[in-house]
Length: 177
Image (cartoon, rainbow, N blue to C red; front, side, top):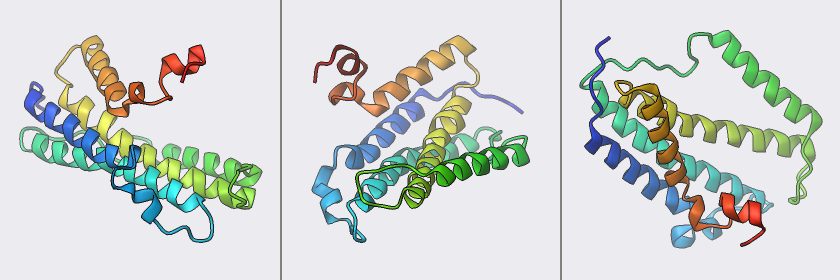
């Protein structure tokens, strides 16, 4: 497989798209959470907003992958080289979370909440990993590993925009809001 040098313009557009689209949900631009149906609990908007946040990076990665595929064959797949192992790990994790249940402030039965939270998290993680490990790592595959990982880690941190909220590393470690 021929690996081309990263197209930095494409990387910048990917980052701008991922950040802008994800920020609509992350910062609740246009007050989407108050417009979402509750289905009898305040949990529904929380889960839907998490999925909307993940959709931003997935759409940006989809666009970037389509552009990159015009230059080279893309080496990734959803289940990787060991599909049985990948599916077994997902099933084991989901089974344990649902089996033990998760206490929650929404009044939802713990096993059902575990299933909803674990399923939502799984979908969110798949969307995020499609961006970081799927598209962006492939886009930068011609770079030396140290450079590639430093750039992806920095991009990942910037995309999360943690420094704009009380979820930043500094606030968690100093107790400052």
